[in-house]
Image (cartoon, rainbow over all chains, first blue to last red; front, top):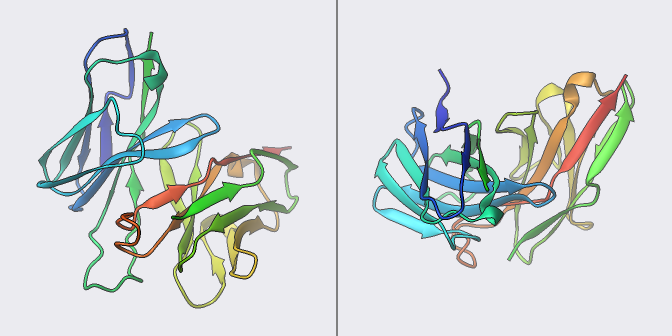
Length: 119
Length: 118
């Protein structure tokens, strides 16, 4: 079974609709992230969460909201979808960097992505 | 703040030829550098990383990268590519924790699509 799962994998919706994308992980990681990928723009960070009570805005949070329901679940909502939110959305997880050793890096593990089309 | 520039958006190459995917970064502090690969219809997976130590880093699938501080580069190389290497490759940089509010998050380049032809 995949360690990081995303549902749905594909979604077509209309302008103005509310959409929720869900992410679940079985890796036991504390940190979770939501990115969007657009052709030619790479990945841009939308929101990230270091634990259930710690949620932070990323580079492009406008028009999005998130909820960390549990350590293993992090969902992304589009309150009123618009066409320029058409993109591929990825969830990722990683461990907390521990012990104050800044050189400790914990790899980010990505889900398979959700392709969202807003008409 | 850190930034990453991937100099080529697309790189076509024939099978068994060598390849270099270029990545330059900008930062006023020490950085950690990464290459991720995205195969068609999949998420990203880590190819290799540079945190410290030897500037030549070896990763999975025969790829390697060299950290060059003076040229602020972290180019990815493979001496002989296979059809299965066809994918999009992303260079990413991470600054120190709690520097500039980054929280140690990754900054990704725009990606390079490697197309390996028979």
